[in-house]
Length: 144
Ligand SMILES: [Cu+2]
Image (cartoon, rainbow, N blue to C red; front, side):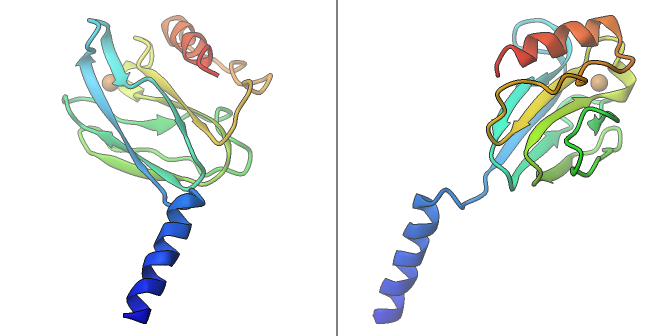
């Protein structure tokens, strides 16, 4: 009885402290709900450090991977395989640019903000980014 009560209190404290990591699902789609072609849905996520993002291979032919220069300096990059679900836990706070390699030129990109990100780093969009992808990244950054 005492042990049960203690466990219950500890769990409550964890939840109240926001220490329970969440999993966020992102679908990789040929066509989004709004009709746009080749999209991650949602295309912008705000998560907490330690949260997991799961990229679902809802439609075929997609992958999810980070772009060099578009993740926090102390973050680990990841590269998902085409047609496979990939699950990543994002510990380092900051902004992550994620693309689908086969459809990068068609603008299949998304942005994940980990922790409180108020603005994109100055060099976030400095690399070689296809025009359509750049447009969508800029739109996504409008959520910050
Ligand atoms: Cu794709």
